[in-house]
Image (tube, rainbow, N blue to C red):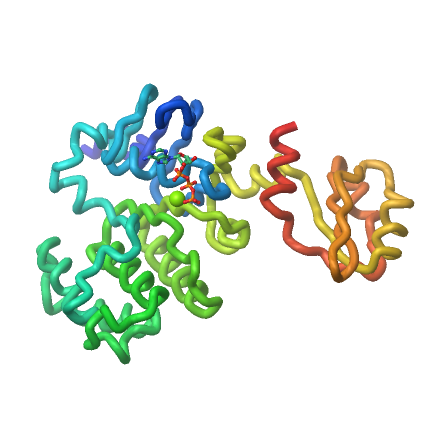
Length: 309
Ligand SMILES: Nc1ncnc2c1ncn2[C@@H]1O[C@H](COP(=O)(O)OP(=O)(O)OP(=O)(O)O)[C@@H](O)[C@H]1O
Ligand SMILES: [Mg+2]
């Protein structure tokens, strides 16, 4: 007989953080942070420099302890289990981007880590070849890593984090400093792995990463989580649209806002002006036809202001 209880039970979250506080002397790096990451999510941990992203990742990896609150990775306390091999195998990590051996080739680096994870070498070889081609590193994979650019090393480190097919992958700013094409390739790789049920936590300062990658987001500001949940909820919570154009076009728009649309702020720049609007009702949205303006993505600062009100 099948175990019905087992079948309908929702899977255990990959990761939970409950009311975590962490200070470094007087500096409060994390203040009452909670979040949950379930299987299959691409969860972006979004925040500017110093928001607390890396501190949270260090806690999740069992490198430091929270002052209070609880953290579970695969249902277990990462601090207590930090040296257990079982967890390491289920985790893929990009934390220090250049944790590579520079005096050997990229291929040898990958093979070294494949052996540590006891991967079946014939299968690994064909997968590694395919992945190196996709990420744009194949042609130079037999060169010593010391000759590689920072971006190439970063992409190799991402491959290293993924190649043993971990269930949960934690990447600290994987695309920072990469060119546009490389960012695209890294995002494609992440999407492919997600389709095979890999779960991701990705720290980023880049709103466009949220727009292009995330299923879920936690927005950290100065150690506090202003929002944690789905992307749809994130944008709904913010209810903002941003438009850009000539100063007179922006003035025309702000001078005749329909009911249900409020002006949040206007700012001038070298090319004209930008306006951020709060959309309170969908009706208002329908009647809004800004002439001569282009809609541009909302910025993290826009959302801060809105969620922090
Ligand atoms: N070991 C440490 N000792 C003292 N202060 C620290 C330490 N680690 C982090 N901090 C402080 O905690 C705060 C959060 O830092 P953290 O590195 O977590 O931010 P972040 O969001 O990862 O920023 P970035 O985008 O710059 O990487 C910062 O003010 C930082 O100076
Ligand atoms: Mg950081």
